[in-house]
Image (tube, rainbow, N blue to C red):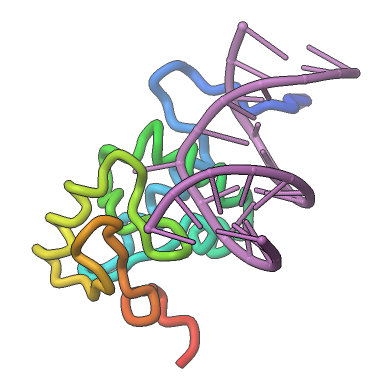
Length: 115
DNA sequence: GTGCTGACACAGG
DNA sequence: ACCTGTGCCAGCA
C-alpha cells in the first residue's frame, strides 16, 4: 500500500507507537531503580530525551513515572513530593531526601550498564 | 516555511 | 544550588 505519511497522525486518544514503546520500557524498570530520559531514548535507539519527556508529560500518568528522571537524579518537575514518597516506599537509593530530591544515580540507574 | 516551546543533557559561571 | 547558553528532536500556531 502506498502510505507516504511524513507524520504519524494518530487518532485522538490513541498512543503513537513511540509513546507505546517508551511506556513499555518505563514499565520494565524494577522497583528501587530508575532511568534517565536520555537513557530511555538511547535504550529504544530512537527519539531523544525531549521526546521521552513529552511522552511522559502526556501519557506517563499510567505508568511508574517516578522511575524516569533527569540525568542528574532529580525527579520530574512538579512531582518531586510524590516521587520522594515512592522512592522511600521502594527504598530507592537517595543522595538527598530534602529538596532538591536527588536519586543516587550511581546505584539506582538501570539497567546497570557496566559494572 | 518560520519561530516558539517543552517532565532533556551538558558545559560554564 | 541556581541560572545561562547551546545542541537536540518533535509538536504546534
